[in-house]
Image: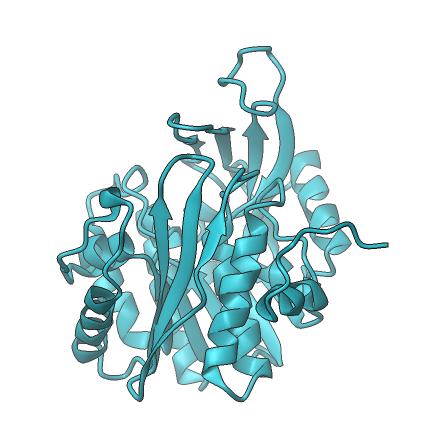
Length: 341
């Protein structure tokens, strides 16, 4: 099984610990971005993962490729071109002060890429599963066209397509709406991944869900997922993450999966003292792709994804640096955190 992800990887600049941005003048530099984060998770689990993007021809782009190689990600489908690497600044939240992200990614190399820049036969050669998110088509008109062409080309080649809807209100600036674009893209998706906001803002499918209350009604997610599958008859399943935010440090975490045959709920995790929640959704997507391809029971696939993303909350950085045995240990109920010797 070879998986390809396509999207933007960025330079991540984070203030140390829980400092406000530029409080001390120091920033921690790493790399991250939705589709790359998924590829790293899959490679950590031993899957054959490739990442496709466009990176600038400079030393920052070179460093990014070296980082991907470190995580055993295939980079042969990465183009080098004009433009810059996108950046995002992150300020870690604590207690009642939320985390904050500031994007600086206009005119990035991938945002200027067009479908005709790629040799699609080479991009999809040997690929069994293709993953994209709703972030890439939000970047620019050309990135929208690239994303739509990619999913159509994948389906034409009978490749399974997964998409994390990932609504980002600060990115949709070029005139098209998320509902218009993602409504078209979702027609080609086999496995959709989302939270309740993604479904409502990206697809325009509404539900009476109040995430600010800190208490989620699971039955309403059953109804919401049924609505999505009815609207997109070719979609095989949708997974929705369930986050109850009590504070920046304390969340309750779980997920549900509707595959038209049944509605499944994962175990619920109580996560306190969160280290870094950025990338948790991507770690869920990576866990679900792994689970669906390695466990015959879809309940186990869902449990693997929920456990993997639970562990991500304890790992600094965008990437979920955990292994299959670590995830399966938590799946089995061992969340004691005892020192392993």
